[in-house]
Length: 276
Length: 336
Image 1 (spheres, each protein chain N blue to C red):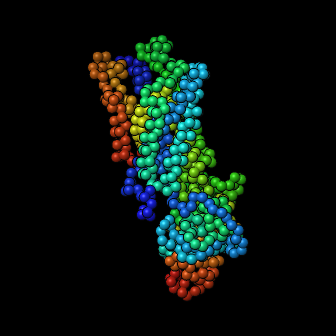
Image 2 (cartoon, rainbow over the protein chains, first blue to last red):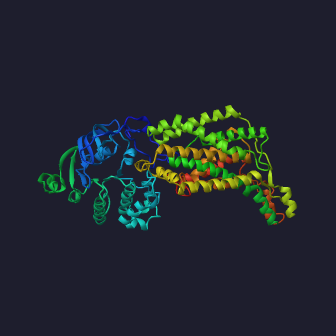
């Protein structure tokens, strides 16, 4: 790792009998939350004109804007390396946003840490390492509800209703499940906080087409319960079909923004991103 | 041939001491494995953390003795143990605040923390010697034996005696209680589960609203408690000397690695594997063999495989063999 911080250089050490690199956290832009200011109006969740990158590295996002309205599904698509996941992380506070701001439900939350954004009602499912593999399915869900002090058993029942296979495998370590089941655990974990908005980073990555269709159905089901969903997807066509709003990112910039249907119909978008 | 006396001798000189030593190593290895699993580095200061906790316990034991407070047949040190744990936890938390927290905030690679812990080790080493001195201290009081060799002989009429020392009994009982409470805590409580979650995936733990600093704090407190209990039990069984505790680091690490670093069950199993190997290999088997073998076939020599001076070689060899042939340890820890 050559990001200029000498402490993050392991000097070639691979000796696992003295060091345990598994599950180590990544650097976050801030360790303490700043102030939240009121910013009424606008969409439910918006990352507005965000410019930023990782650590002291170069900018990856350039004036990038993504938003989701209440009761809608917004989808971010684009070619590899377009900054889709990065934009998502920026909205969640896992990336240094050097200019621009993030608003949630009429409040400016740009200065909050990711964990405080969870408390504000954001749920996030990362693309990889999105479950606790050594914990059982049930414990994964319990950890999802960690910030809740009230009784969360009814929420767990709801999650089990949504993903019945998880109820069957509740006592099994989550790491032993199949790819599609793991994604269900990941989404379930995020739903346990009763989030006001759910952010999914490529929920269908690495699963079979049949499982993918099923996952999309479940995501629509979650959206029907009134939770707005912001989602990054590789399968642009399928994702735009269910999207109320679509964002096409190219090299960290907004290339096209429209409703899902309009983007599907746009000849230029079709030619460049949907394979004709 | 006299098998009964052979078994009694074996129990008296090998099995019982190894069980006590194994329990002490297991408690020490549990602390090492918790730090490895949750804070992600091998804590070289663990031996000296044990020494520090034991030192505080001894100081309070002396204070209680000077006040004339005692537990009757049990050692006064048990009364001082909670205070020793508190003192050790306080010191370890201060160390974390002053030293480790900085590196954590930098997301320093674990190997840096290993080296940092070595620095902490030297400082703790010095602090302990500065306060209590480098000499041997025996601080056990109360009844010395649950069953003494002579009572046993009189009771059974056998030639050999089987002595069970109070410290051995206390060691085993305390170890069982501590391990049971620890496993209950890690598997059943909300905080314990959050520690396992943090160990598994730090970023996701953060996204679930688990406060990393709290997890780290609870881990240090538990580790301080385990280290103090292990150190005090070892001190009651043998005696307290700062340098001996520093040397305990090797068998403790061997235990943790043999069992599988990061696996609490492994740490316990590893502790007993190391203890039994060390005791059996350095024990002079002559007496047992004389009883066990037919008359006249008993060996002339001591039948001691290795002098006790070389007991650390045993840990070392086991460590090497495990790292060569089963690097994840007996219980599939995280090391490779």
